[in-house]
View 1 (cartoon, one colour):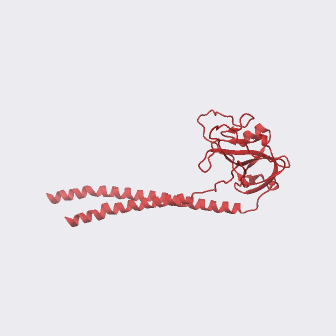
View 2 (view 1 turned 120 degrees about the vertical axis):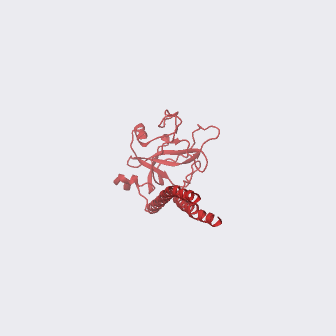
View 3 (view 1 turned 30 degrees about the vertical axis):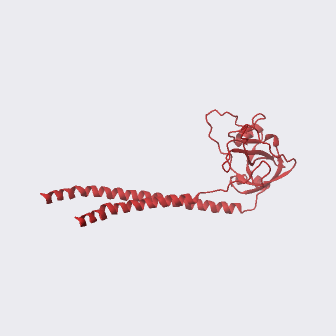
Length: 256
């Protein structure tokens, strides 16, 4: 009777062992695949970082280069050198743009080029007044022709607002210089002047304007860390299966 009972228990245990084996193999395959996916992402971003380094090492474009080929405005981070005059009366500020742990504004001013074309320049960052958050920052206002060194930038990203209806207008006015969000198309309509693109100014900082912009970080090491975690999970699943299905039962039989 005892042998029959043992045989019955072994028979009932075999299907369960196969279920555990299949579940373990699936877990190991999925987690390993996720690990390889993270390595692929790391390789992709490493390639993008190398492309960016090569792009930034190229000679700076001037307005003639950009005017002849409008597609060059898509080459974000490429260095440019532009000469023109500021439209200080159209300067505006985007609110809630943090910089190194502080809350402040991005300052924008259109630059009018010698042929009458306009580009929008992100001139720098300024801290927000802690006493009066609505106070408009005062910026340097150089007159006459200026030369701006910078790099091609994307449009200002749209910031999340607390409601669908914004508390401030979406374009600058004389009464509203501080905005939540803005777009080139809106500015072009308001100013009745097409804006060819956005330039991030990289000249040395001025009083009230910081230009110590953070370096572009593709977070390659983050993907390596995730890959290590997924591979470790895959290995752990295999080791647990070996321990609980083979080694532990064998040791238990030895002690019996």
